[in-house]
Amino acid sequence: AQTVTQSQPEMSVQEAETVTLSCTYDTSESDYYLFWYKQPPSRQMILVIRQEAYKQQNATENRFSVNFQKAAKSFSLKISDSQLGDAAMYFCAYWKGGGADGLTFGKGTHLIIQP
Amino acid sequence: DAGVTQSPTHLIKTRGQHVTLRCSPISGHKSVSWYQQVLGQGPQFIFQYYEKEERGRGNFPDRFSARQFPNYSSELNVNALLLGDSALYLCASSLDSLNYGYTFGSGTRLTVV
Image (tube, rainbow over all chains, first blue to last red; front, side, top):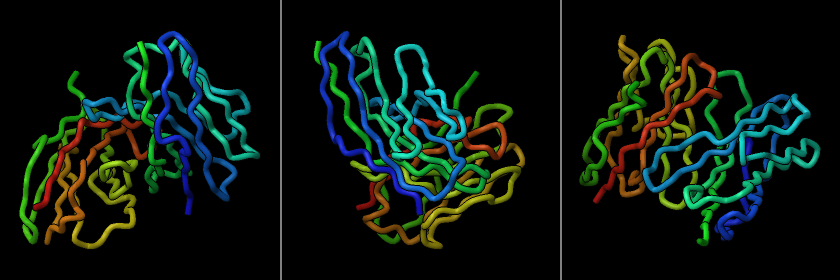
C-alpha cells in the first residue's frame, strides 16, 4: 500500500520569506500523480499544485513550486514570498491513477506565518 | 457557479444511531468521492462514485455505504455509529472518473457522543 509521510507537524516562517515543506512517499508504481493541498480554517481542501511523475520538470504555480525527486520519492513544496493568507494546514497526497483509487494523504504540516 | 455543497455542516449523533450526509457536486461533474478526516490526520478515502456506480472503495467497514443519484448528487450513510466515527466528512467532485481534477466541499463535522 502507498504511504505518504510529512515529517514536519508544524513550520513557521516570517512574512515575505521562503519556506519549504517536506513530503516523502512510498510506491511501487512508475506512473502516478502527486499533489499539495491547502486546508484553511474554513475546512475546504484547496489544490495548490500537481505533479505528474512522468514529467521531469518541476511544477510551478505562481509563488508555489515543487522539488520532485522521483528516485528519492520526495516531493517538497516551496512557498516564496510568504503571505499571511498562506497560513493553513498543508497536505501532500498521492494518486496512482486509474480512477478507482482515491488519494492517499499525509498527516499534514501546519504552516504559521509570522507578521 | 456554486461549488461542492455539503449538508449539514455540523451534527451530533448518539452511538448506535444512523446518519446520512449529503453532497451536491459542481454542475457538470459526474464523479463524487467521499473522505473521512479524523482530527489531526489527513483525509482518508471512503468511496468514489461515477455515473451512479461505485468505482472505488477504501478500507472502511460495511457500516459505511453510499449512493449517487441521477442528478449526480450523493449520500453517505453510516450505520451503528461508533465514537471513532467522529470526524470531518469531505465530499469531492470531478468531471469524470479521473481524480486529479477534484474540487472539495467544506465538509460535514460529525460528532458521535
